[in-house]
Image (cartoon, rainbow, N blue to C red; front, side, top):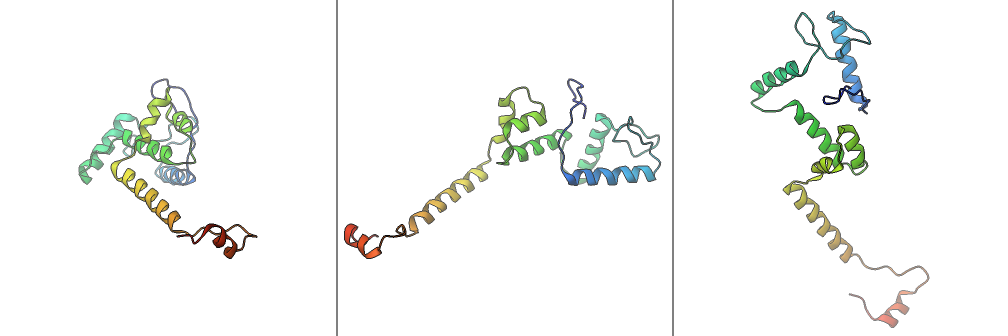
Length: 158
């Protein structure tokens, strides 16, 4: 992709599903006669004459969809959603998310680590349930110790 601010070219990781959907889009465009080629834009407008799908046209597309759905999504919301999901994945480092987003400072990326009220409540609820379950489990003696000998030494356990 080409970065908005610097116009620098950057390869970005993508899911296999995204490539499948991209290929289906390309094939549909090919059948419709949309010009194709390595040097041509990947995304195009639906109406003739076909033109590259630039930011203003994509925003207009979102505005039309928002009007039909009664929503207010933006292109930037897609970026925020992807960033939030990556940042919340314990197997993705925050520095990897920073690289994908091209943030100069890690502190900018850290905003995606903020948990909502419901998430914090659920995390603490699970924490207490885990501690409660651990307290209720009987302590099993290590192999080689006879339970009756331990009872004689330490008395009955609760």
